[in-house]
Amino acid sequence: MNFEYTEEHLAVRDAAREFAQAELLPGVIERDTEAKFPTEQIKKMGELGFMGMMVDPKYNGGGMDTVSYVLAMEEISKIDASASVSMSVNNSLVCWGLEKYGNEEQKEKYLKPLASGEIIGAFCLSEPEAGSDATSQKTEAVLDGDHYILNGTKNWITNGNTASVYLVIAQTDVSKGHKGISAFIVEKGLDGFIVGKKEDKLGIRGSDTHSLMFTDVKVPVANRIGEEGFGFTFAMETLNGGRIGIAAQALGIASGAYELALAYSKERKAFGKTISQHQAIQFKLADMATSIEAARLLVYKSAVLKDQGKDYAYASAMAKLYASQVAMDVTVEAVQVHGGYGYVKEYHVERLMRDAKITQIYEGTSEIQKIVISRSILR
Ligand code: CAA
Ligand code: FAD
Image 1 (tube, rainbow, N blue to C red):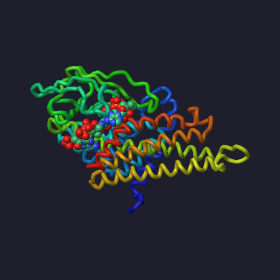
Image 2: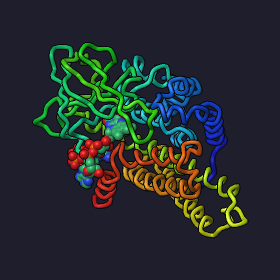
Image 3: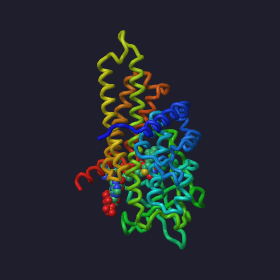
Image 4: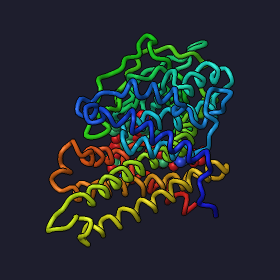
């Protein structure tokens, strides 16, 4: 076993850390309060190569491994989880899905601008009445000559308004169950494609979450990803990697809150000494540090398995399940270490606590991760 980072890993981590401090930290409280999408910051992240990190350079990507991606996700998420969810969706759902399963024409047309960050993408599986139970979705694509006619509603779509390209999962033959679901590339601006209002959320408030309505939208057959009936497998395989990104996001939220709590505990005095000299606070810090380290090992393991081409579905589910719980536990304790100051926006930890919750919900709730893990164990 080798627990060493390579020089490239450290360079990526440091670049992401510097960017987050210099470009994301200023204004993060205002963006959260005003639910404002980090437009300029995401543009710069594209220019720095953070939006298509693992994509082959021949498609304008960074050609990096998953460990580098995880390190960058952690650093960005320490400061701004609204920015990091855009990064995660673009990298590990949209770009990965297109690179792995798209054809050459689709990669030229869509993957190249997505990987360079020139445009961003969205991944559209969930519906108002089908979230965890993803096969029971109602969006339908009916073949009509050289087009499909797409009708239905997708819900909770990250990058919903900002994206230019949407990977949409839809029924093409409902009688075939999950084998009658297909995946399509849908461009913004097509007739009948309407973006709904932005959701007003507890956390990741800057993130751009919208419902999408499709009414008789004409999608070219050339924009189908893989064969008809491949869409559910496409979604599941893509989410296996996406969950590594969200696990890294949870790890970053936890680490960010821990670092703030550690620093504060060494400054704040009570009963004649710093609160870090009280054993109750020391034990909180010890628990935080231990659980973060355990989460980090699970996240890295899933990334390494993916890089080695081994089965990583169960490992990414474990990493997301555990890291998201750690994010919740650590952020709550970080607020506690800050006392009353933790409860106000200026000290950042209350935002991290609100941001942490979503990591237990999206890309499969914690209950769904347990289904994935238990099916793998019992197989
Ligand atoms: N990897 C690969 N294949 C998988 C898989 C996985 N993790 N999970 C299921 N499959 C395959 C199965 O092998 C099966 O295929 P075969 O019949 O060919 O063997 C097929 O999918 C159907 O599987 P199940 O019978 O197990 O299906 P199910 O209806 O019982 O549901 C589920 C399985 C795991 C619960 C699945 O529906 C699921 O993952 N639900 C959660 C959906 C989700 O994660 N949504 C996230 C949306 S994107 C998002 O959230 C982005 C964001 O926030 C930023
Ligand atoms: P439900 O599926 O209705 O679940 C409700 C509760 O029941 C949960 O606790 C769940 O765990 C539990 N439950 C359901 N089934 C079972 C079961 N079989 N066993 C045990 N417990 C069960 N989706 C996208 O497609 N693309 C996106 O970009 C995207 N971004 C999102 C961003 C945000 C901010 C949010 C809030 C959601 C986003 N989602 C996105 C949707 C997200 O993936 C779903 O919300 C999630 O999968 C859960 O689905 P649901 O909300 O319908 O809850």
